[in-house]
Length: 263
Image (tube, rainbow, N blue to C red; front, top):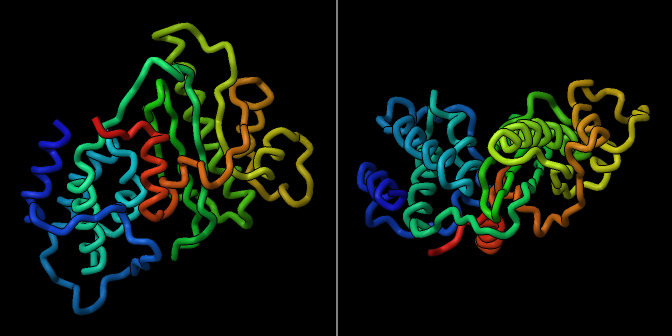
């Protein structure tokens, strides 16, 4: 079914014979916020392509989530560079059309990965990303802009941890309705030691008092035993794929962690 859908997208936009792409987005690409004068009025079927990609990004292909959510911000006034970047995502899907989300009997416990990219975009808002796995395969994932300007990487990671914690709370409630209520905390991997320490310390000092109180929800969840934040090195942080363009080698590594495997 997935292969047929990818082939249909490629055929619809005349990319059946386009050259392969091994990453969903080019590293270091700078996307202008406003279309250039020479691009205005060009008939790009941009919204149609982004809509087709969104279905894949939310259903079976978490690896294109960051690229799709980023490109979706330019649907109102896309330029040629946005159009080429969107076509690259389709070429990437065509190249990796055999990948499938795979679940197994081992690692049935829910585990999560969360990460953020601090103010790397032109809009200066950090990107939060997370993924939750059950049975070795991703069941829930997200990539989105943070609603506030983060003044440090610690705050960006802490805000991302709050977003991931809210999803963990929902997953714990959902799984308790179809199986047994979870006894142990949900493991959430984070690659920022300062954010982990902040989630465990309820004595908020001068350097963190500017953080909106709603983002301290993660501390409440840790204190209540719903989640536990565990340090994970950046090189093996699977949620990195939801926050920025990555090189081919890292994309392949995160494929395996998320359960995107060849049959």
